[in-house]
Length: 281
Image (tube, rainbow, N blue to C red; front, side):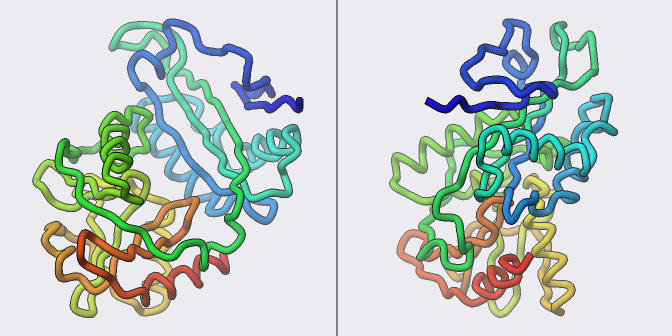
């Protein structure tokens, strides 16, 4: 049986080898961040956007060694791992987790980073523009996401999303919408959200608590370039009952059309247009 590897602090390590110690701060406190990236056509899509967000997150968490996680370093680490796993010619998901090393209680002893880079092939993701027939969604209301200066981080402290994921499975849905502490639309479990209503496209502002998605940023930039107005705003979930179209964005799946919310059905115009733009990247 072929051995699969991860990159643990710069060393290619069999995935079956134990690496976690009892005082690991990622395990004990969720003290870290992560990036989920798409490897496609021999490179990381939106590499510079991922690096920019990663480095900003490390600075927010007061982690040192930011300069070791630049575009060239991340690309090299990825090539080595994918080559070792013999999947460098496939479309893959890369997950980089960076966390604080050392021990200590809530007050860390060290601010040095450690990291784990993992790779897994994505079967069937050959053409994102035709990858699905539409998602079904609903709103998750058991818990809410607070907004603060930490909200935009891809934090490894993800209990809210785990519980929302359990609800999604129980309800047989493709995705669920997370609301912020004011009961306004924030994001979904794994994506940012865009809503078309009366010929205008809206997306929650970062101040509303959503993650600063790399694909969200890309869609906003493409829209500006194409003269398409998108407003970053506070969005009441009631808009879902009257919206014309809803689509989601994330780094792996690109743009995903939402087919329905409860009994409501949506058009698929803007999402197709943005899917085509993203597919050319």
